[in-house]
Image 1: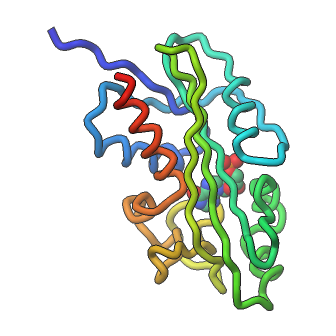
Image 2: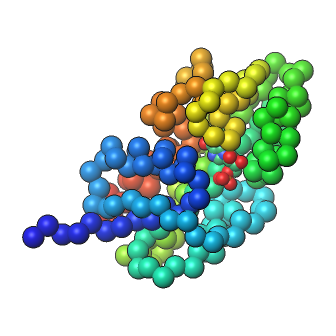
Image 3: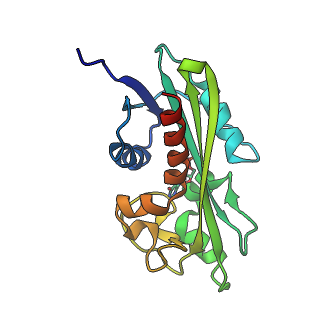
Length: 195
Ligand code: IMP
């Protein structure tokens, strides 16, 4: 008889994030079923993304007996904003938005930026927490471009695909270079190794 696959939950209310991870998940032969779960979590204001992700993971109250993970990301404009908005990414997007960001850096030709993603996993078989990180380097575009993706995607141009913003790429293309996909690849290696 075929054994039921274990469920692993991605705890997120962000359907874009779930779609990106699902596409990556489907490319692999894994002994897991990936499911989305929205749960009440606490998002603290900390000095780095890792702390935010860890606190969020620990704030999940589960009534299931499975492995689960959360993911937190941030957008860092290294030049000229010295990493801002970083851990304030959500607040800044919800207040001044991408237009406000472009106004802030309008006078600069160098606009080096990167995304960071941290996946925090509760791995049920070992009853332990594991962290997986990924980042992508690029720059802020001169204008808002593209309609796919979410958040800062319309103003971020990755170095590896320098002709488009993230929002002009398909999910597969974004996944080929993104911070989230890189963190995911590490989680994947972990899951395969701990089977
Ligand atoms: P979160 O706390 O991980 O949801 O993300 C913090 C902020 O960064 C939110 O405003 C998101 O919209 C934005 N963000 C997170 N990941 C991405 C991404 O992959 N592309 C663009 N914006 C993102």
